[in-house]
Image 1 (cartoon, rainbow, N blue to C red):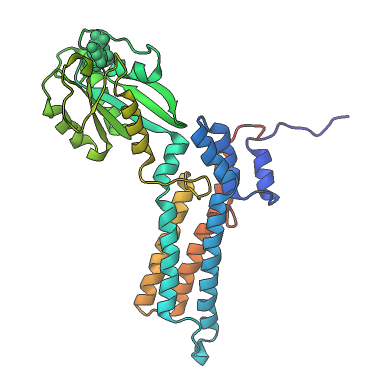
Image 2: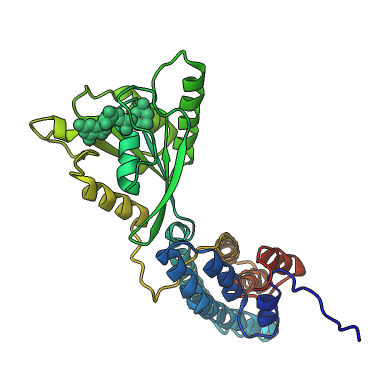
Length: 348
Ligand SMILES: Nc1nc2c(ncn2[C@@H]2O[C@H](COP(=O)(O)OP(=O)(O)OP(=O)(O)O)[C@@H](O)[C@H]2O)c(=O)[nH]1
Ligand SMILES: [Mg+2]
């Protein structure tokens, strides 16, 4: 007898769970994140979403919107009798409140991305200042070749490390200087690329050498100041610790390294006061849906200011409601679904 069997498609089991209403769409997407998470923090973030923190918040916002909409629509039904169910100032107040809460969610995205994808850190500076030594120290292994000859590192060395549950992707780069050597020139070009792509730049100086401002100026021309940590290395070689707000370390003795790691972590977390109980946006699709919802609410506000008829307001409110619905999957199209489940591995 020929049995009717076939291999499962990618994400088929999760998709079925979604289609049978066992989980909502944001939760289904979290299944993929749980599978892909590589650090404790990213796993916690994904679990948080799987537990439905974001879904719950979005659903709350959707319900408040539906509530506001219903007043506007009721007003439309009774337009001829000239009965008003909600006055404009109250309507504006409620819409503004929802926008405010959407803003709160949007603001969690940079942190959400950190716990989901990790943080790119470029280690840069002049040749021989100890960039590779610092990488090795953080990794607790001699991954990169260290030597007293300037220009040792010529290509980018990429390594990952998890510190306090956050995934750091470290890029050790070629020292930046003027060079006639073709290979070194290419390496330096790549260093500049790494700087542009980094979330955080560790700019390393040798404490014993004169502070060269050119390289700092160049980096500030490539990235925002706030993303740069200036580090003075080799403090074991100087008798007096420099009095500056810069972080002083020794890759040789390990002095100051804890401060450096603390700084890396605090910079990655930003101003977020993340708790396991708060909703966090870590998925670009969710972020974009929230932005769309906010835009529609902005239109609705304008329509009220411009005293347009209730129909306009009602359409915008409905669009905003649909955008929120797309996050949890109350409103979906086949395209959205296929796109999401295509990225799953088979058997999940
Ligand atoms: N005393 C002392 N020496 C250090 C320290 N950090 C690095 N060095 C030495 O400085 C030299 C250069 O170190 P590297 O880590 O290769 O420097 P780099 O910045 O990667 O150099 P390039 O790859 O050539 O750009 C080596 O001889 C290291 O042993 C430190 O904190 N103290
Ligand atoms: Mg090096």
